[in-house]
Amino acid sequence: MNIQTEILDSHVARLTVQIDEDVFERAKKKATQAIAKKVNIPGFRKGHAPYHLIANYYGEATIIEEVVELLAKDLYPSVIESSGINPYASGTIENFEIEPIPYFIFSVPLQPEADLKDYRAIRVDYTEAVVTEEELKDAMLEVQREQSNATPSDEPAVMGDRVRGSLHGYWADVAEDNSDEIIPVADEHASENQTDEVISEADEIDPLEADDDDYEDEDDEENDIDHANAIIHEHDVTLYLSEAHEFVPGVSSHLIGAKAGKTLKFTLTYPEHAKYGAASGRAVRFVLDVAKVEHVTIPELNDDLAREITKSEASPLTLAELSNRVRENIQLQRQKELNSRYVESVIHEIVQQAVFRFPEEMIVEEVDEIISNVASRIGMPVEDFLKIMQGSGEDIHQDATYRAQAVERIQHLLVMRGVMEAENIVITPAQVDAEIEKVIATTNGNSEDERKYRKMFSDRKMRDNVYNRMLEDAILDRIIQIGRGLAEGQGVAVSKQFADDDTSSDSK
Image (cartoon, rainbow, N blue to C red; front, top):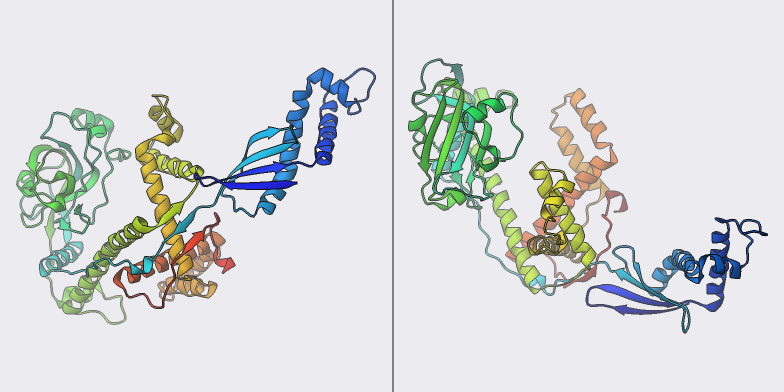
């Protein structure tokens, strides 16, 4: 068997494999016997009819098809091993010829490769998270409100009350808007983060999420609720009547007089500011179904309140200590957000100078993953989503937008893997054990909780999850150090071919 290897620009290995004549003849005999076992030929027992009779009955082409299948199955593993290539996926038969000598041509997609060049030289400006006094004041107000006493009220809402209910919003400054932008609704004063979006403790709102059982579809129809076109769709929102803490200026004035069972409709224009994201400078029509009005008694912010909040701790905190903890928590969360964006910036710079090689099959798989995620997000089976997207008859895998996203994801992954390999980043089983013990320690000696945690982490999948998270965090931390010029050691440029199997903690 002679093998000639050609690496194509598409990152596919084309293997031309010459078959020895005796191997080919044995395969023909074996194929003939296999076919003979399936048919009855007069004068011969099954499987014993000679080649020329089988050829007369079924044609030479049928025998050759069987030969190709047998040879490919028998020879392919040794062909891959002898060629020295590292396949990304199973190869395909590109061609098979008998003359002048029998030979195969296999096309085999190769594992992705990345040459990150001098990635250690990348520098990106780093921002330290800062918490302003105004932000701390808002956060401490939240602490007070969490400890507040709320009593249901049948009276119309006044300033200082809070309103719970179902909130929907629609663009009001255009006749029709097909934008997919979603505006998160804050139940408190919105603040600005580094993503230039409105943020709060409320979850991001999905306009296509399932309706809550507390709100019937008939009620929505009566109030002209159009879920499909809603940019805000929240069935359990809490809004405080406080001019100092509004997710959009002016909303509190429209809530005055609200009563349970009443529907409020009003239009507000968001100020032009980056923190409002897609809503900046735009008018939104709101529809609020009021479920409950509550009078709120907020406790005084003092040492007594701090001690009450932290009474379960070994040493309850003073107000000053509690304020410092809240500030630190805000700063940690904000730094985490800033670091996430910083990592993306560093990876982007590495991508710009790197050279990547990966096969089409990898792009197809990533597009499939993206489509699956989109379909899941909108609550539609993938098959139905594909029917809609492929209505034009075009191959969804050739869609320019999806392909661009897929390529970006692949490059991001290859940079992460490349840095891991070049920086020799490893997580040992002992480190995984230590991390698990940290989690178990949060049970504070509760034997039942500790037993549940230990049972949970005895599962291989859970340990692998811990390992993968720790490994990813370690890689991201190193990328931050590299971008800031703080990485220890010399580092090396990397040109790496990556295997397509996830490293588990057991292999370390």
